[in-house]
Length: 124
Image (cartoon, rainbow, N blue to C red; front, side):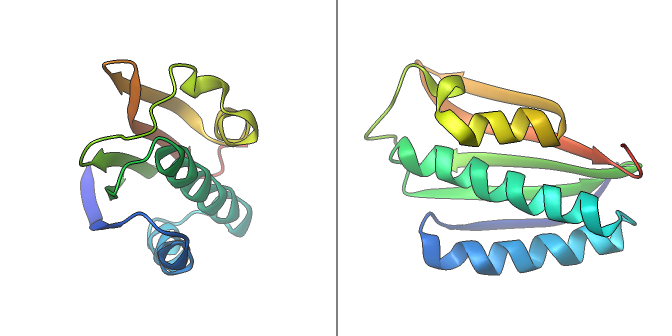
């Protein structure tokens, strides 16, 4: 597995566009097609929204290459609006499970803490 990029940043909507642009570049480097790249961008955004809804102040997004792109998004700091039903957080969770492969949601003390998923080249 080859590490491609790791970014830590404050969780706010203004930075999501920048992260979506970075995601497009990483997916292109890894050889994903345009549809897989767009799906990955959606999953990045929805993952960040889930962590924002939990009230985390910041997060780290890490990309690695392994016959596609693996993404891990980990909250940093302390949640101040934790929800026990994080996998049922509406459309964000539904999109993650519908678009990505190997979705993994990790919790700590009943709070969503990290989200991981993969996009395999031509995985459709």
